[in-house]
Image 1 (cartoon, helix red, strand yellow):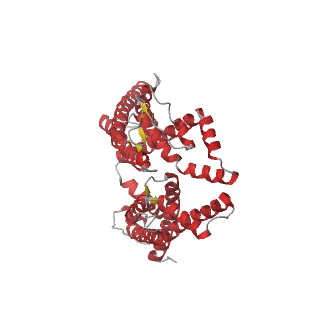
Image 2: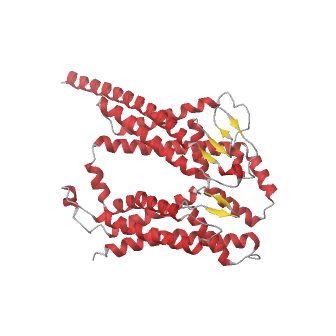
Image 3: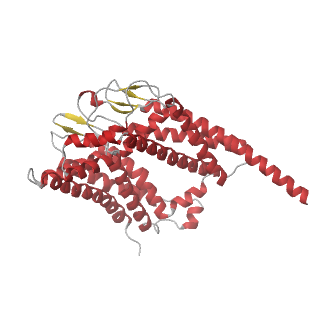
Length: 402
């Protein structure tokens, strides 16, 4: 028996929002008890903080004593995206029997199942987010409803829509209809992003561990008890994705700011006083950069080359045009995605000069497109030459055998 599409999709969106919200509320209450065993404040205040944290993961920002905080904890955003994906898959599986069957879909029959389910899923999620904002927000905290709606729409459409399409089986049908060059280009983009972001995370981790004593010293100066330390570490983990994107912009060349009139890049490091935040131990020392730092710019084209080689070995092509276009297009698309993520990683984190913290997103865009695009183009052409050469050699061997 088929379940009603409207009910399943709408409830899926509401449930996806509810699960992540409930998680944030529980963590907030636990943190309240860990901080001072509930001696100060009330559970309702802790619940409000949890709700505001959930909204911050959706880009809402908030104000603290008149100071606007706009930075997004991307770790929380990623958690929300994962939950949306899982619920999207379940909604897709539940509505898979709606609309045309598999053979009709393959024949190109018009199907509105996924768009309808996605629209209702999104309505449920956005409505839940607006209700949370209305209930938890105050004139003093002032979360931005417009940014909450925008982030919720993007998460639902990009992540939830992909989950619904995959769960319903439509994604496999649609992908089969795409030209092979498009499928291989998307596979290359995915590979390139995975390698690049993984490398950026590793570089950040090495820089942090290299000066780990500074991080421990900062923690000791905060004079936190065991409970607050656990909470503080958990909060730091939420911004590790942000730090990864800071590292990405550094490796690409433009770098990032840690306050107004500051710059951290391979060419120059200009810092003033920085907050007592342990993750900032990964920052390089102010002053002249090491002789080797400019060479990190070679990592981006190398990563593009590796990604193209790995994909083209599995999906070979003998067409010069396909090899070149696939490598170049994948590099450009990956560069655009990295720049967008870099733009989301920064924001205001405090008063005064701390209102300007984050990667230089526009410069990151040009550097990423150039580095990934050039590396992808060279690798695509080189791999095509290598595969054509081996194909010709194999053909010659077969002719000689006959």
